[in-house]
Length: 507
Ligand SMILES: NC(=O)C1=CN([C@@H]2O[C@H](COP(=O)(O)OP(=O)(O)OC[C@H]3O[C@@H](n4cnc5c(N)ncnc54)[C@H](O)[C@@H]3O)[C@@H](O)[C@H]2O)[C@@H](O)CC1
Ligand SMILES: Nc1ncnc2c1ncn2[C@@H]1O[C@H](COP(=O)(O)OP(=O)(O)O)[C@@H](O)[C@H]1O
Ligand SMILES: [K+]
Figure 1 (cartoon, protein in one colour):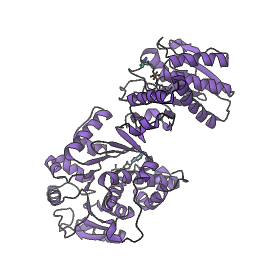
Figure 2 (tube, helix red, strand yellow):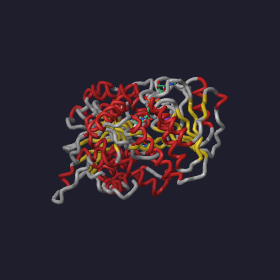
Figure 3 (cartoon, rainbow, N blue to C red):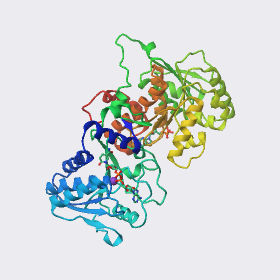
């Protein structure tokens, strides 16, 4: 699903009004009716106090429509107009009058702190103060009101955006921003719902299709795309019945050191679970028995050294090399890595200590084969590209980095981001149960296993990250977050492939 900017959404809005020949009031009614339906479906007529906070722009207009419809269906509604300015939008005014007429009540006006209503933890708040129109931080009594709502302990549903959250920048540390439990957002998700610094404000996000112009949405160039099941499924390549293991490629997994051989077991297993035809593993001698015993499906080659990688020489011609997990970064290993890079032309996957070696020996970056996939977590990324001011600057820096070295970068996190230089893809599967030792090793194996099956590196990265998260979600359903360990993600990858094609299952 495309993630559009506020400017693009406003443009989509205008194109829709023109092409459908409808008024903006009509479009507001359509969008806000969907919000009402969602609330009504969930509350099922419950006898609770609903407090709707409306700004004086179009987000506030949405709030007034929701208020009118809830009132019509017999809900206990109190409406507060947050009067931070006298410049009310036309559609706000139309709906203000409609609300007054149909409910026979006047919304309360909030102009200062003394006007704040009491909010009980059992109330249901609707935040329709600001949407994508926020253009400066909320200040004074307005900021206090947002905090008053947050501190009430009441459930808060944000319409389109949590108020105080900018669509295109990170709020300052002391900024007042609504911390919504749930956000019903119009037409496309907003980038800030997925960035580590701002995702906490939106809570759970649901996108509502308000029917903006299809042709515009199809044509518009989005900076980022959200990857859900529909998008991931389109990347999957079904298998030919008449095929053999040679058709699915050979992955060579290289890494490990004394005490870190487990990472190699996790990565190698994931390579074959992702469907590679063959998997060979290159490790220091100390890992021989461990690997042969725990994963007999892999072939093994050992370094001359007992404890670390010193010379990665093989006669193999693998389709992809997956490098770095548990490798350490001793000077001998750096030398071996350099020689490996010099010999390798095909795109590689580089993770963990492979990334740390790149950070500490920048000249090695120039040896990376084109379209290689790097999979850092945020700390590894910082070592690679240096510090950033905020998540937006981080994205800019990554874009430059990926363009400079012609690589693909997967930034791991609650929502992992995949950067191709031109585009950004944001993964929407996965859960906090995956914050456990070794889940990154599993991911590197999955992506390399897909690359060996001739998935383009970018496609392998997007599909691999999605399947990794989906498998994590399946594991979490069975085991809960705490008990999930990374081997489970690898073991359940088959269920993730099946779920990818299955519409009936929730995950
Ligand atoms: N295509 C769409 O996306 C649609 C959008 N609609 C709604 O329209 C909203 C956007 O409406 P608006 O453009 O009127 O913007 P908002 O309602 O978000 O903001 C209203 C006004 O607040 C002022 N303002 C911004 N920051 C402020 C601050 N810190 N302190 C005081 N005033 C501030 C702005 O100057 C603006 O005039 C969307 O978020 C959505 O809720 C819907 O009604 C229908 C369709
Ligand atoms: N809260 C979370 N939600 C979703 N996925 C997560 C979460 N925490 C971690 N993950 C995923 O788990 C993996 C962790 O990788 P990494 O930090 O390299 O772990 P390790 O080094 O232990 O292998 C990444 O793919 C990341 O996206
Ligand atoms: K809002």
